[in-house]
Image 1 (cartoon, helix red, strand yellow):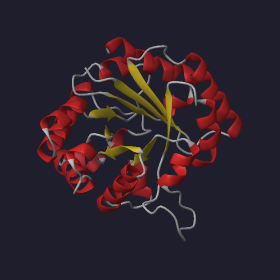
Image 2: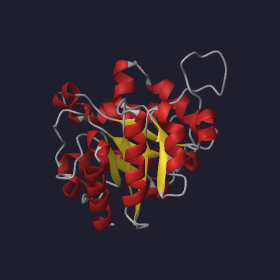
Image 3: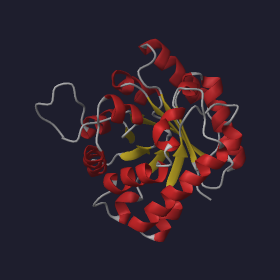
Image 4: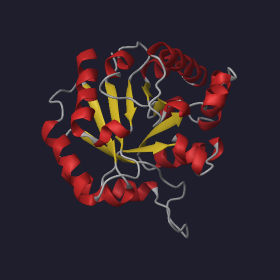
Length: 254
């Protein structure tokens, strides 16, 4: 059975002191079990400090985004090599907020995934549909295109390094959540697309997280679905008790 992977996306939140305090609590109180993988994704300016605090813990640290070039005249951007240098192991790529607010395309996301892999980072690739797309029964079409174009040209060995996060855009930060059955159905579809693009064992072993208003109250039901291998947690990851409750739910189900 795959380990559940619970990742906390802190987004553009917290002060430096708050971020340090949250990391210390996770370091002190995180589940003393190898049954669950845990990761946190602070804002760029906090990464060096958080990596240092969590250096000897079981908690991975990753970035919320990166640029596709290794260095150069790209004002305001951060490269994968820089992220590795401060201690990051993972990076979120293609989050719906990057797609919607910053107009990131599937092609750009594909280039970022390639860049992340080339410098030893493990990407969490996000996919998901908007409310109007779900209402028009286009979830499979939208998510299928995001996967097909985002994973274009990658080998099975490269795909094995990824985690996929299904985050229905209509459920992010809205309080709405896909039912466990709805989420599981899309996760199964995602796995079928991965299977079509790689070896069978890659599709079976790749972890597919659910993201979209995950909290301590709905974690058991969501994480108990057979195709769901963890969660990409937003707001609830800013509260150590809530986040660790989700981690504990994953541990119970592992």
